[in-house]
Length: 318
Length: 318
Image (cartoon, rainbow over all chains, first blue to last red; front, side, top):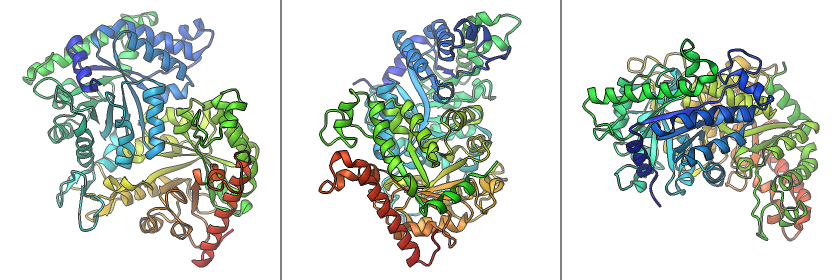
């Protein structure tokens, strides 16, 4: 079984890109400024699932040769009751030899966590998924049973309030917490919660280091927190970072560079709305019908932007 | 808009019970010891969704007069691709005037978190749901916009590895973490992570205290950790605890008593497999066809068990 990280690195090299295109369906029925354009809803006779499929299939077709991986946001597919469209789009990506992350942030324990892993890796055929590690190993290990699939654990998320809990300083005190014995928490030393979580990621990922020296267990770290990203990068050098928050949320290419190792690997950078709905931002140049061409231009711009920032910081690109 | 906690308390009084019946569908096709019995799969012509609906509709019918609330485990409905059965069962509970928690442990930020809230509260019509608070207010607040609905945030989960992260001692240091200013983290004092999360629950729930003095924001605390439950109860006295881990996982009525206030309210206690598949444990008395009667006996036993433990500890019952 080929490791997820090895396959991901192959795709990065082939596509010369670490861009991850986020698929975030948003339809506002009856609105002229609906992100997925109103004409597509009309042409599908009001079928939202079909509308979503058409829109993103076109985008995937347009960008697949310059993008190694796509991230599907489960929340929007659930909101629009469009799980059939999700399955069809995952199939579309796989036919075009791309990789798929389902961003579902699932978390539960033992057989329940297994059920989520089954739904995502068998039912949906995702190559990777996101997981919330607050419940510990009982949550994460069932996902790791799927060899060759990737798991990205939330570490330092991109949102403004992520610090409320993730930035607390925490400490493992063995005499008071004898149950914390097997993990890599530094004893008697205060470390922020997100770094404690990063250490757990290192432990969970130690068994799945691929031939190219990266693990199949990664971490989610927001582009909006470059300093924290640098720390996480040091603590878990062999784990891929999935970096949201580039573009719309304010993260820049100079920020994400801290997540990339000197070899040019170790990070993928997600942009969702900045690509999906690029036709709206660039309305002088593109009509709503040209959404796929606008998305391609946005991906090309992002690829150039990241490659240039890597060059500036003397890190390899691909 | 009536608050969720007021409605829950009405149901507790009417049913004289704080038992929450967990609906955890498990079918092993082709196995004679399948939890949902094989004969039901055959009778539905192999339709798993229909099998799940029949089995749990019968159980809900049998126990609804002695149970205030049902908790549906989303993972299993996703595993079996049975979301139509989930919707139908939620409708069945509502027709019988019961309350519904969807246990989905969702978590994301801003518009994505809103999409999950929409899917669960509008799409599925749940009265309450579970949420993972690792991402902070940006995750939880979109759920709280649905007035009159309940939100249970994971605090100290019932599983063996919950301590890996939740039991770390943590501290808010204002000079180092100025972004942590609005929450109720005790400055300069080491408090375990799960209690920090409990404090956040108190803050999030402060705006939704109902007429009966309980909040619509609650906390998940496992029956397997009675000492920790006692601490959480003290830190957030006005927030309901959803207590998993009774029965199969090892929690007892004497354990869960620590989650109940002197007035007899403030906790609901979940059992899933111990009720759903009681016919298997009690095979001498019940045939597989009598699963609903076996489930009723299990609920009656649990109600008596909890009432007796409350009497012993001089807490009110209902």
